[in-house]
Image (tube, rainbow, N blue to C red; front, side, top):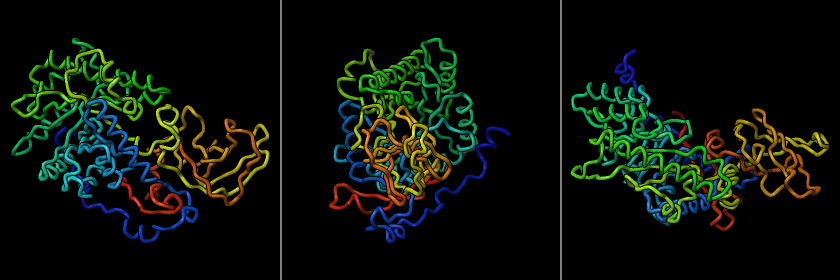
Length: 444
């Protein structure tokens, strides 16, 4: 099948898809005590969520950088608003990981009201999604907003050219070049002048009438292994070095790619970040950067509003900043069943409710305020084991107990739930009852 025919396939009408009715859910659940909810249930503390968003805005300001909020963790209109407008600052730039997220940002009215003005589709562009992205661009452009793409292969440029050639009025897509800073997830390594893969991509871009380089983008997924601010800062510096090298190579081998001041832009955007590296951003960290920057810095991050055990292990956040948890019910108890003679129990939150992601701290989740952890999981149930890191005591669980579990990876955990119960620690009694319901965007 040709590139053109792939990009012209019938597209899914994302703008017509409906979500579960928030109003009906709110009517049923707002005011209901948490211990009366059907379990497993996913709960977000709105106040902590908002405080985390303000802290990240302040981090970007301290670093003298712009900020782009990734909405992939929660996938909700309410959460997106809190990420973009906080008590510390505001931004209008987002990253989405799916077309569904992008269209629902539009459907929620966040583009029409000016909250969102810049949408980056955060995967290297798939040929069979170009037509959908084109429709998205046409829709948001009526409000003065823009859609940007990631590219890391010449074939993607060829596909965009073929698509634009089929239009009566061809356009130029605004693109970030995705840079591999050693993470080996996506992107191409800039190396140094003479790097054949990166240079070939730049020359393809330079010769193309269908694209215009906005900047260079790197994501330090390997930074989740950080256990200190200095370690995370080292990952951040490596990210900056990667995108800065990419910009320098571009200026050397493809000089016409350098933004044109006459077009209203004189610098590349150097977009870096992950939640750990963004947490380490500071004026001091920026001062330690040894090289001359060939663009303007932008931070991006996604997990930071809710956080989880993976982030806690980095030591860059504290337990009181984790805004999410899963409520589960103890459904049976097994005295002495553990391999060391300790007790075990079973709850109704398993691999679907908690994901199968583990982390450096071990297990699949920790029970809040009790010396138990989610040690093993099957599809719909989890085995609770004694947390050997907790002080020895005789506290046991009872069948019927309602427990709260913080899991390893909030992004995957939240994806399982059709709606989230929202509490608010800033409201009197707000942590014990539902104050709102958020409905996430499902699908791709």
